[in-house]
Image (tube, rainbow, N blue to C red; front, side, top):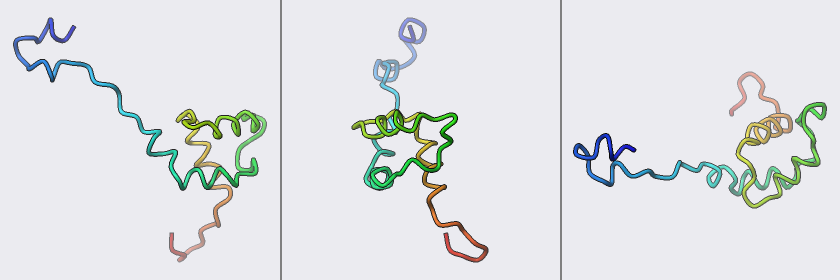
Length: 88
């Protein structure tokens, strides 16, 4: 489609579709895996999240990146609370 409209204006390499960026490969690395290996189900609301299904998803080689915010929520629930003046 782009080639039909702009074919004479740009080189073919510019007009060819490229795959979308994939961020899951970066997110699901060692630190995330270590956190999830010790996850006890806390930090997520069981009235909205099926913890057993989430565990199965997180045990996959490439979990759905849509669950990344739940990883962050679980980490925040288990991380030591910050106090005024403490280093981050």
